[in-house]
Image (cartoon, rainbow, N blue to C red; front, top):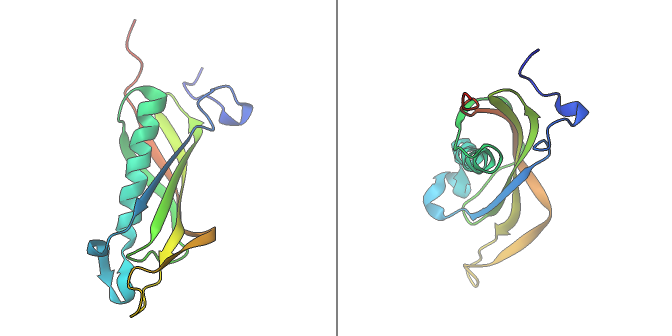
Length: 142
């Protein structure tokens, strides 16, 4: 018998667990012209939601083992508010697969008259997606 739990069969009640974080992107994160933020910023946020996922589902911070299919769909800019979501989609003996999405939910639109002008982005703009794999310690020996 393998230690893998078949997520499609819904055998593990942790499958489908969702963790959501929101964060303002301050101007210190801009690395490129036009206030663009590098892709590593989003990957770091994926690590944050993955850590909370491991804590919630396994009682341990876990470790990120790798990413698959990372895609950058739209820019993230300084002044944005982003939402980062992690959904647990597969549970193995020690590994967990997460679907990860970073979306822009508000965008700064400064003008000379209103340097702090911003607007909600509705629907949110999907900026980055990935599949991530984390590992957690194995069960305690009985």
